[in-house]
Image 1 (cartoon, one colour):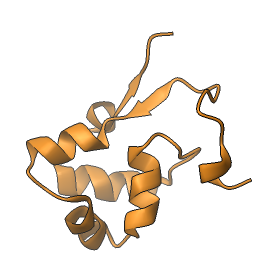
Image 2: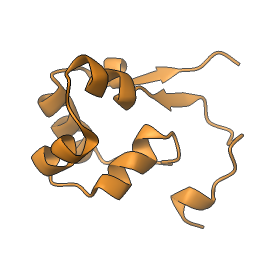
Image 3: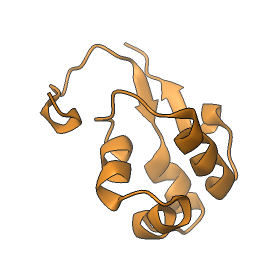
Image 4: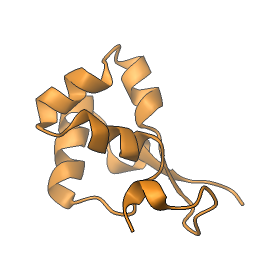
Length: 79
């Protein structure tokens, strides 16, 4: 199963707030992808809450470029 095959109502409660952070920093997904050396497709999967995991190196790179903490990038949605 690939990340894009996951059902919309997956059982995890973690939400990615990448879209909000990009908007606040006036940065495009393509620019962030270039800065962290990731594909736009993989960042889009993360942004749209379809990712099932993230490497600490990826998380570190995102937080560095977005000047944020993991807690600002991710939140727990109320169910």
